[in-house]
Image (cartoon, rainbow, N blue to C red; front, side, top):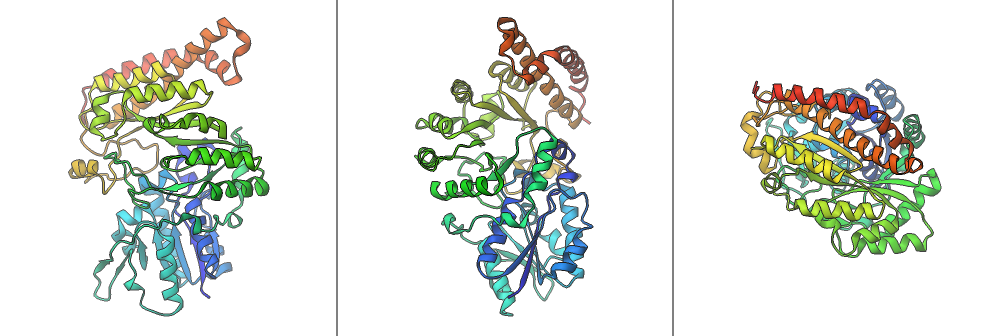
Length: 488
């Protein structure tokens, strides 16, 4: 049987913001694909790039493993890979060149390769897998093994003998997720990840996924791998996976990296019941929508099952902007979900997006006011990022001639003509964080006055740093005012 080497193109050290967070996660999607091919009888290995500072170790990996096929299979469950960061693309091209020099057949499956297949084919890839990749990859490798024509497979892009790029029909999505074996955790060094979490003083977490896809239609959100669908593992499969990770790695905290967690009716309730039956006590965090959280007593079941934090795609405090995004949620739903989660002692975090088309200063002020009023436990602030195959991208694509991708996740460049320029939004991101921390500091100061012994260590820190946040927020505000009317 052929020897298949897997890798991926996300290097945390190439993304300074994420690397400094010291919360790296293993490449889950890559590990699923490797376990699937191994189950089918192929010899597999994995060159994990997550913690590497360059691709130099690839040389010895190729020498030792001598793969016949080198597969760059990005972790489609990691939302950062959807952004197609140029640092990672360049690393992928380097890996293709190295593996090609070792006479490997090259296959690539990633968001970036799906959107820009011609670039990867020009870099030396033999086949690009579009969308969900496990079944397509297995069929490709079978064709390689049997020395048959692989160009007939649905879901691939390749260059024919005449030098023309051929894009085959898309493959139907795979629905029976429980038929996939668990990810190949044995192919990565979990302790290397754990050490970095401990260096950052944070409780070690591992990533899991219970579903694939998202059925909602926010017009800026791309779904290049798993599409506008929603298929789910059974609660039994997920509980068995949790049990395995606890027994083998001693981990008790999990990041459920689904686009939308717990959408299927009664799934969360069944999950909660099974955890209790298996005597599994966990702590986990998710991302979700405000409207979904309000359905069918979801919050109660989530709290009972061990949910500690929810990242809500709040996006904006302006209903006008939410409607323009086709978000399908309301400010009232965000407010109610936040209140109910806090009542259950579940932390709430907001994803905030500035820079959407026709955003005004008033829209920005409404968003800041929402953050101050609802006071989430954390925020993630970004600016609108045009992704291929979205309605938003189609509206602004003519502006993307100079720059169509960020270098890293802290780039924050405006790549289209928005209401304000990149300097304004970069400063706005910093200003909003300062205002947020200032508001938290004032809240905790009042809490301290009522009961000095009620504050936790990080809350004391916010009180201590309050003068800093007050001062810097004033300075940032003045700087923003100067940038407000500059469009270049």
